[in-house]
Length: 399
Image 1 (cartoon, rainbow, N blue to C red):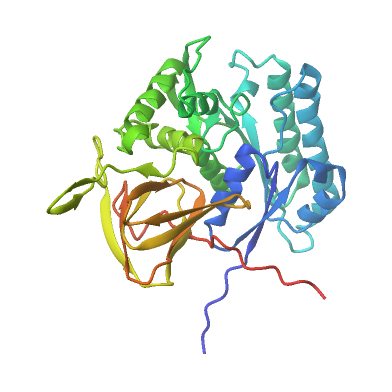
Image 2: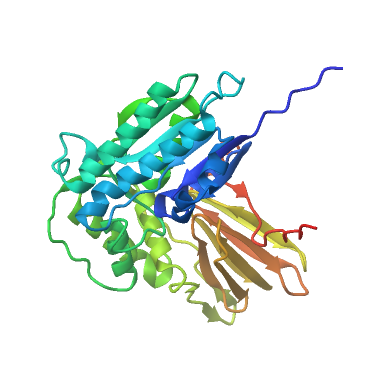
């Protein structure tokens, strides 16, 4: 009797796991089968936890770094983190190949500031990132076996849940506009931008393909003022009544999802305007500018739940038209949770933020009628829907 061999699960170690890039990377890895992710945070660099995690790692993503500090830390801090990682690699994986085990593939989240042609290459940050990348790629050259290491030099990254005044000017603009402020531009110029989700995809591909060396990463060229104008336009269309703005530009959907994250949860639910007369009531469920999508109608019996999944890019709208329900959301890989109790007697709009797992439960005694809308047609080959419970299973106490 023939049997299909079970694919071996891969262990992925992510340093800087709770940072902006590290969290997004772990969320992406969560969507992939046969990969178990082990987070490493800054405190773990000072303990043997780093060696323990690396001892049987298949993939190592080095996202830990220092990008806001004094000049000494910007230079020496990034170099010190790279040296600590390499020391741990040398002590745990040396000779692994001769023992019949494969050395890990290491991917470093570098910066284009390290590139010689970048105007900031000679700054402490540029020098520190360049040296850190060199330390890591040099390790692979001397490790032998199948060890690999790639320095992906990223341009400016932006995306959902970036910290304003820290991770990116895009996060600052989105936060300011989401709270009805006006963004300040002090040095308008054209720069390359890359959504953090795309950066994560490139990191995962580099690890699985076991690439080596320095790889300069491109982004979409856009003026800083254009980013501000785009976010302001999105907000002016979306915030009042939930109309979906025209997203037909290279960075349209990523910028809109970044803005929606900055508006979450204070701007939700979005009220509807019922038009009622002797014939009944009419409400507008969706108005989309310059795009399309797909509308679903579902009934859910009392006590039953739909959902328990999250999306990476897809925009999904919930609107209860009849009955009562509870919509529950949790930011993946965190305990941050928000619940909304809604009713068809007063319909409201709630758009699911990306990277938040969500579900809807009929809390009434009659069938629940819900309208769902997504900004893209459902593609069974690429559904952008990852099953993940809003309520994680309780951890069983160890004896």
